[in-house]
Image (cartoon, rainbow, N blue to C red; front, top):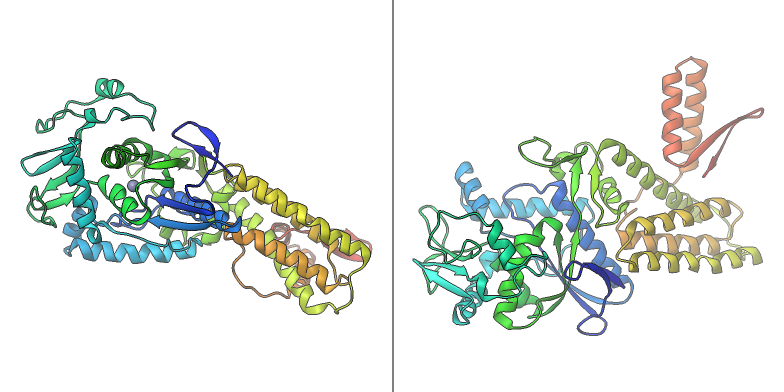
Length: 465
Ligand SMILES: [Zn+2]
């Protein structure tokens, strides 16, 4: 397995800490609202990374946190007149609703700051003892100058960063680069007791503390969106490596950005799309398909055209699956011919190719292309005269591969041929009545399902492509 490691800016062979095992920590959402399309991408990407490692025989431990103590949650709680815990609880539930609809499996652990305060405080204490952190007026800051590797993930030196740093009005800090590990409580904010003051943690420390608690000092893979490289992941490294004196994560995996109709997503542009909003217009499995049709590191543009293309592609996968289910119910149980046996034995090539695609830095775009080669092969080989065993072999391979991507998971009506015939009849009727718009609409709908119509002397014939 090769993964692009942001730390070294290159693809590297994945070598686990413990043979046969892999642990992954992915930064989760701050639960103050529904999550948006930009958040959805890493959730889907790391879900597939996890599924693929399992598929190739690894035992995976996957941790994704919920940030449930944060300024945004506190602000929302003031707006809504309820406690920050209630706000967090609400949006954790909403996270699961949307994540389920996107086919994202639950993590092995979904730790929250509020449930891990002793570990967070312990880690800050270690950093203070080691001189990597200092206390001023009940606030604790990380002393960036004490960690000479600071900037290694984002490829910046402390000097570069100092030049670019804004001079903060906060003169409590020794340097503008220093960041808060613990914040003394302000009026109306939730707080926890600590050796420094009643207060709450800064944002970055939670991931270091929870990763350490659930996965150990050194982990295999740490992931998140590209936007987290600096400062969040840089700060996590400073905290974790400053405390343990060892490597924090062996592989840093980051997904690319999402644009909306060619523009950066931002609240000010009003193009901020939550998954909940999108679900009103698109089936969320189509959104998952859309994400996986691109390589995870490529920037992608979220627009109706690409979503429609993803919808058609997904529909073609469903159509072939349902056609196989239909055949399985309707063919008689005879022995496969020699030709069929050879065809079945060659199906293994698709599996091999699919694994090679995903082993190359999780290239789901190529993996999907391989599944479509399989789809074409199935469409041109299986029919009512195929042996049940032949169909079963193709069906089992198809579902095995689509399961790795978490696609084609819904059950549907399987008697498709009748539905297709009915649509074709409706189209003929529409043409007779000169309702060409409706006739074209039906043709497009069939095309989207991979059905091609041919007008012949004997009437309309159709085939799958
Ligand atoms: Zn994090």
